[in-house]
Length: 116
Image 1: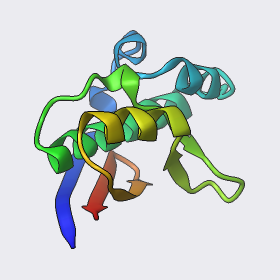
Image 2: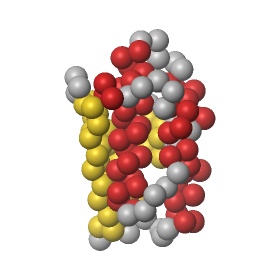
Image 3: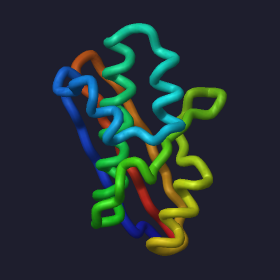
């Protein structure tokens, strides 16, 4: 049964450097620093910001951005790390979460589906 859905879209150019320290976890900062181009860094920040907003919308309440770490598996697919999942399950309820991020020239979009 679906417990929540969240969708978010952001214009990548709206991202200003400095915001990453407010919205990215330490694990995500490490990933960000591996990118050399400003364009790719902005895409990364925008995608993570969008997905965290989608998570907040799916749960229906604010969650501190830095409490959520979104990593990528060997195929590039995003997932929440174990500490993020544990935090959310302790705060809310037991759930399965499905997440996706997509980037286009000007936008990053994300979706989250929570189910029990």
